Image (cartoon, rainbow, N blue to C red; front, side, top):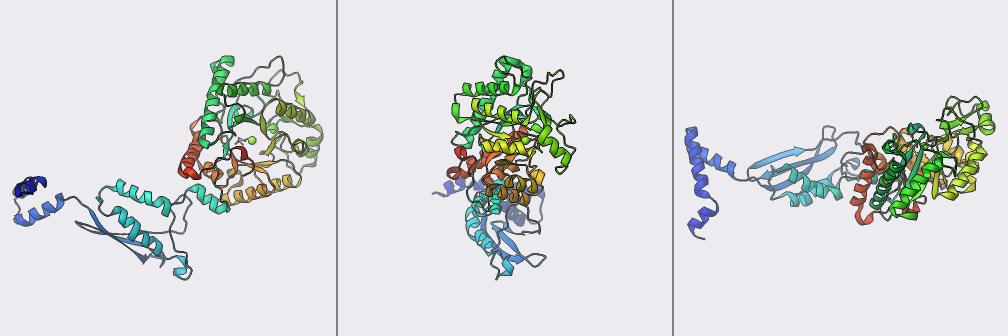
Length: 481
Ligand code: PEP
Ligand code: MG
């Protein structure tokens, strides 16, 4: 390379001229020093060396310090630590060797800095913060941070991370909507999907076909949605049957047939029957009496009626049903529709009938209002074989640890467990990770519609993507995982 080519390649004439001009403009008393500092500034920064070491924090507990060298200078930083290390935080990598600083030494973290992180960052411009952070995040995935579902799986001692079958609410009634349907939810379960991603697609497509079916029959107004995103049309009775729930199930059946997925999609209902249960005193959804009240227990077992027309002002009484009538109705519904799960088929104190329905083995019988995720009620239900699945509402229990305890109770009894949202939700997606970490096989978190419901479904998509080849969708094993 000639001298001229060299000068041109590095644009030296231009840079020196700029430095001289800057010194002249500044009228500096020491132009050589000025030009030398000016030249240092225009040289791009580059990380030349990284040196990590173990130091002690203010409590005398090991932590990490790093010296970072660039062509322009050196910089030092160290890491604080606290007592409360929440599950959403990046994990502190401590050696765990009780013989060294009682398990708190950080030599593995230091080794990672001096080897893997150094290797990734040397040569980078230290001012490119996001690129540097990304390079460390890329390493971090395998080295430090633990995804929430993995943390839950570690806590529960489970090893088989599993994507749950979603129970999408597609029609809402009862307390979740203002229409005339007494039962609270009609759900669809894409059990025949091969991946969660496919299940979500099947759910969404069915939901949109259902919208069209409802619009054709009930107009735009019928497409208003309830609290959990299910459509809530005011249903009309047809000649061939006299139950509104049949009309609702028929709409969903038609929507499924339009998707072409056929048997791959099953149905479920949450009857939430406490809402329309009438005791002797004609109190709807009697919430006032305690479980141990002998008078109420007598009512529940002997005099309880279920009013499937509870939203109608002028009712004939023809749809007042006894517990036995309700069992007959469930038998007929299970024979006519692909129903694989019924939640709260009776009042929350009607232990007798829920057991009788479970004994028939028609489908999964889920206890929600019946159990209230309460340890004692779950123990009773297991003891009396009252139902075959638990609806797990973590906020009813209060803590993750207690949730894990009741899940263990349910699983030891060979029950299914449905991880559940609430009708009043937020964008928090914790229950998505919970369902994967506990490998429960089932999640119920509303329609594939509304942001707070999709926050959970979208998180499941991300988890499936992150697990890649390791991802397992519960599918046909939705109850057995
Ligand atoms: C349910 O009954 O299953 C449910 C999610 O409702 P809520 O949150 O209103 O108890
Ligand atoms: Mg329920």
